[in-house]
Image 1: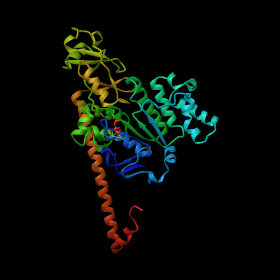
Image 2: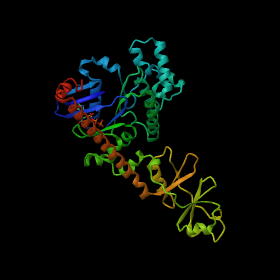
Image 3: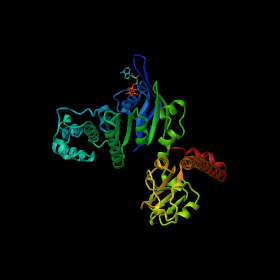
Image 4: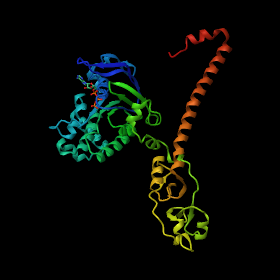
Length: 405
Ligand SMILES: Nc1ncnc2c1ncn2[C@@H]1O[C@H](COP(=O)(O)OP(=O)(O)OP(=O)(O)O)[C@@H](O)[C@H]1O
């Protein structure tokens, strides 16, 4: 829906801020522009609402060249959020949020009602509406900035490092809130950050820029982690991308085995006969109680008499990722991750090596999906070839009226 067609921006001082950028941003999704300082992210963002005009190329919105839309009209449909929120210091929070509705000619009562609604939407209590920006924390001001950008319910939202100026804990809260909000609102969002972790967390698609305003890769977070286009992207994504990739694999997809899991009522002799260095002791509903070391089992009695070592943590097969499973393995005294169902009952165990097979499985699924697509395309091609044969000499006439139109 937002399309860059060989767009460049050169400044008179000779700087090329953006260099022949071609990019198509999906409607209703979050596209993150990420890259080192000065690589042209903000310039790219501002070319969407005509705060910066390209030197060459075309930016279009829903198929229309944005140069054909008057800037004020264009910006009415595009919310804009910046670092430090940029609130008007002498206006109350409600008045700040009501800015755009008032500019659009809404009456004061309606604009204030909308502002109150938005205040609630971004998770702030209504009594804050009467305060002034300096009476709010940085994180709260940033929420107000988002509420203000949503004032006229614009389909597009541009966000330039909106969460960079707050501490990491508040930042994580704002990110989580932002994900929740987007699930509700389905805006087309373009989000600038220099933080690859933020990009991976928030983006449906990520455009990685290199210095000189050149696009290095445009891909989903999963593909960026699994298949960086070159050394620059691999370096930018970071050395732990293999581990981070596990965040995109569902825990339900990791291969588990039954493992050394025994109820507390099991006689010690039987536990010893299992021949495992560690045994996971469970209650009569298979909920884990702790690990028993084979070397430290009592002479006789049952596993209920054994001293147990704490689990570290389990991972849930519903909701957790393979990364949580790997963490469970690394923190476990037995080096085995323990997978549980929604009731907390043990489903199975796996070590780190076995868990790493999850990414191999993801690779296979991806390759199969790609294979299916090309197989599908081949089948479609065969079909149309068949149709042409059936239609005999009329095939040419038939295709002339077809095509994309
Ligand atoms: N008005 C201007 N005149 C000249 N050069 C400019 C101007 N605005 C930006 N630039 C240059 O264009 C390049 C891209 O700038 P831009 O602000 O788009 O980068 P960025 O990726 O957003 O950087 P940061 O992460 O540091 O904000 C930089 O080299 C910058 O110095």
